[in-house]
Amino acid sequence: MSEAMQSDYSGPERVLSGVQPTGSLHLGNYLGALVKFVALQDRRPFLFVADLHAITLPQDPKALAGQTRAIAAAFLAAGLDTDKAAIFPQSAVREHVELAWVFNCTARLGWLERMTQFKEKAGKDKERASVGLFTYPVLQAADILIYKATHVPVGEDQKQHLELSRDIADRFNRDFDAPGFFPLPEPLIQGPGARVMSLKDGTKKMSKSDPADLSRINLTDDADTIARKIKKAKTDPEPLPDNLGDLKARPEAANLVGIYSALAGTSDAAVLDEFGGQGFGAFKPALAELAVEKLSPMTAEMQRLMGDPAEIDRVLAKGAERAREVAAPVMDEVRRLVGFWRG
Ligand code: AQP
View 1 (cartoon, helix red, strand yellow):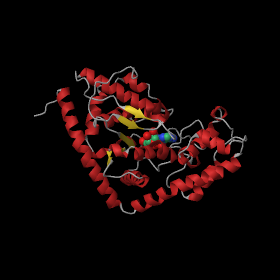
View 2: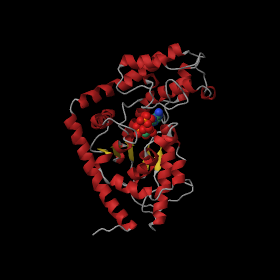
View 3: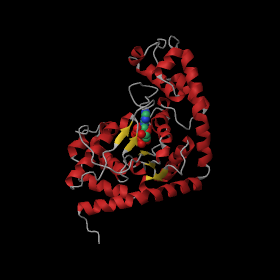
View 4: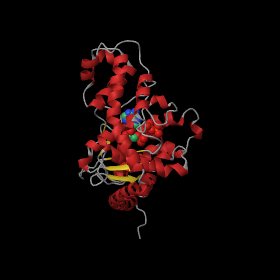
């Protein structure tokens, strides 16, 4: 359905994305999201810390605000400039929730039942999952559309949710006879690092919530830990192939090559030109060295920033103010379209 929909939207382009404060960020978040945010920052993106999404699974209330600051610190350490990007906590802009309620009444149950991330996160006992976890993609649609965002840089894992946002936008525009009111947002998924896989299982994505710490490289890991995790990463006994076709059939090898090419800013083919025929005994140390070289300066800067929480709070407050200026008039228009009393 999404593919065929046409957008009548003629407003300006806007880039938006979010990251959940659910734990330490990892290499997948860095390559799939942060690097892309920085590359897009001249488009003045809206980048929020998704604390409303975080509580769809239990969080420690004493730790949550600190985790929110840590994500903001990671944004800044990755190179985001607050004169360009608005960085803010999602919960500080109440219009996200208000629009999400309206969208709860726009989205259809059947659409949500198709969402694979809910099935993965709810696990076997879905009766005990929070209702928020089920309606998470509806809030995500509100996050995007409250700013009339047109482009959303995300990792591959979020593609299905973006399609749902398009369906919700289209349905709202039609239900309320408002053609082109909301844009049909497009995911920006291309490029290296869009899907970084677990170091322990090349078929599973690298994830903050994986109980195995060895499955991911955290942005807070020191050089020795990074090297140790890469050394212990699952591989097969064969040397690296010299062509992409053979690499495809070996998920763990493909993942490590993909990480190398994304960090080096080159292509998988170029990595195979250099390392094809060599064993992991040679490739893993080279990858570890590259990962440390790229990540260490950022880790150090994150730590420095975390030493000054008041400065991070100023950044978040400034971003929230800019976000509210855009969100409030859109919500006012939604209230008018839906027919709510407005005094
Ligand atoms: N493995 C990944 N490869 C590439 N991109 C990834 N992203 C997440 N994992 C990978 C992208 O990072 C951004 C922020 O994600 P998030 O923290 O909001 O939630 P998530 O996608 O659910 O990430 P995690 O790490 O798997 O967290 P948990 O375990 O808490 O659910 C998004 O753009 C995402 O695509």
